[in-house]
Amino acid sequence: MSFQPWVERALDKWPNVPALYGWLSLDRRGRWRIRGETITRPQIIETIDANYAADERGCWFFQNGPQRGYMKLEWTPFVLRRGEGDRLVTHNGHPVEQLRSVHLDEEGSLLITTEHGAGGVDSNDLDWVLAHLHADEGGDVESALFDALAAPGGSATRLRLNLGGQIGRVVRLDDRDAPAALGFVRAPQP
Image (cartoon, rainbow, N blue to C red):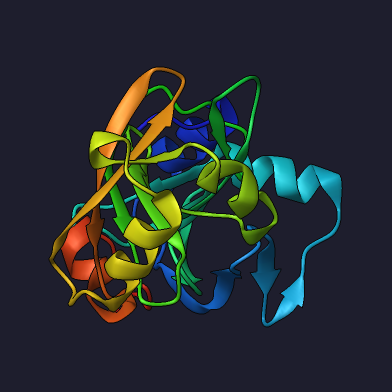
């Protein structure tokens, strides 16, 4: 893990500060929250964005100097948005270079695993992403999407997502199974 230099210095100076649980969260729109209130100060948002990482358990946190504040995730560790061209970008500004897996949940939300971790596509950009779905053998995308939504979790679909020349086969995944399947914890505990 790589954090801002001031964080690294604080960790060296105070290595055993207890972690904080239950105060910080990330909502489905990619907004940081503290005790349920949306954080709006740009300096705080930038600091969290730059010092956000996961531990070996798949628990995501903000490293605030020597103290680790674990994030409760309303959905996924990242919220993905439309970036430049046919690319995605994480809610905290990291361009997505690799589509590792693509999943469709029972509500029609797309979850994509990238080099940064698992992310859900922001519903504001869902139409744009859906325009990049293709059905096998040139089939009807709407029909393949309907069939995929009706399929049980874990099922292969007839859909592929093509973003920036990267193609990912879409697999059905129930939302309740997403954390275990994609390697993250929604509500970290000590």
